[in-house]
Image (cartoon, rainbow, N blue to C red; front, side):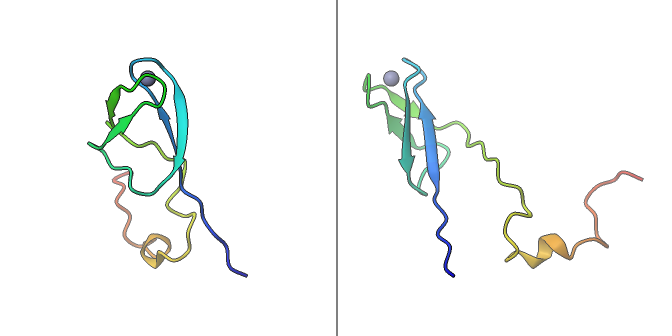
Length: 74
Ligand SMILES: [Zn+2]
């Protein structure tokens, strides 16, 4: 089975609060996104994500690092 992952970015205009969504992986901090409602040029200041580092098992460094914890919680 092949599973396809969709990256869907949700934008909210800083000026008029309109929401829109684009399935796009190229959104980066500092990029401009033009509001489809008012035409304002928004600057991406941050990207929030609900993904956890353990979502994808193809990153063995995340799951095998039990002996080296970056936490200083003694
Ligand atoms: Zn707008």
